[in-house]
Image 1 (cartoon, one colour):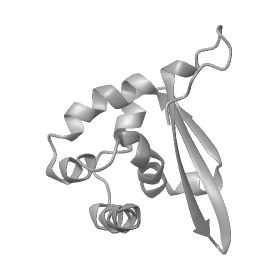
Image 2: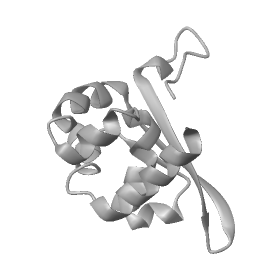
Image 3: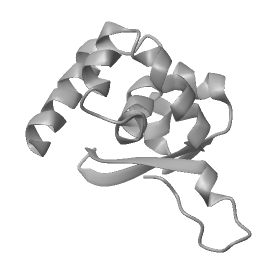
Length: 115
């Protein structure tokens, strides 16, 4: 989701938050990924050059899948509730060389649920 200003002097409108709720060890957990909105805009064009991402970005926005992608790329995030990324290279790395089989399975399952 795109964050909106709660007060006129805050900077929320420069950030996006992606979240995923999942079950881990019998417990339901929610993970939030906060990042600079510009990173998504910059990465969108680059990712659509790759066949794997082109297929999914025609259906999903980066915001909708960033948290899931982060959890699958960085298992250490399973122990965290929130992560803030303020580096474009760090954000981009979440999407580089994904575990395509696992990510495809998760995204296809979500696609079926949302249709």
